[in-house]
Length: 181
Image (tube, rainbow, N blue to C red):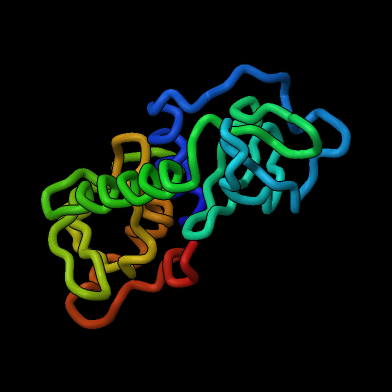
């Protein structure tokens, strides 16, 4: 689910105007995990924890977010970014809160691959009960549900959810979401 969360956070950060024009950073030699990221005033923002293709994973004091490499400008052995650490953390927290607010009873929920699975029937402390498009109920761990790009997504395919249907009234369904994926 971290990947989906990073997508939500990245979208929030990109919408804030934080992009700086720069060549594709991931293609440049010498950019690697451990590099310090600073804001335009030279204050620390965070550290690069990894590179993922054309994206950079930025770790601040509170969050780890995946952003396009083009959002950073190499300068004097560091990477410049157009937001302060506090702004990145605030944007990440706002994005997470917005995403969590979308996970409510009645919301449409999509399986992996983008197919409509059904709607959220109910939510408790540990589980989300999904009413599949077939009318059957299935329970999945809350950790297996996230909101990203305007959709609520479950970490299982529709077929996996249907296979677990009918178990909602007795025990939690065993799906791909049990492992936190």
